[in-house]
Length: 107
Image (tube, rainbow, N blue to C red; front, side, top):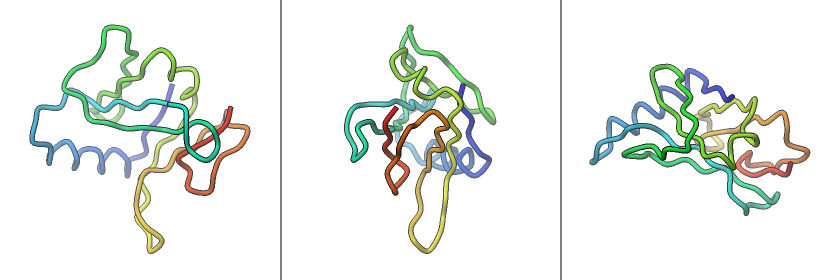
């Protein structure tokens, strides 16, 4: 379904370690918005929903809701740390267009 690079896995691991509350996994979702029509969202979750698809990557559990699952098929999530800034980048081979920040797309 989707892949996390080693850099993304390490960054997420740091966020989980620094969390004040228990974390069962990372939710990656697609919602309406952003400059290209749809945007990616990531949140640490205390539990999964029964309808979630669970993807494991590098020992991390990723929760994906039924709406987002087809839109995240084949996506690679990376964490980039550069002089221009740091953050998560999404490489979506299914997107017909995406914005320069890499956080929104159109299908």
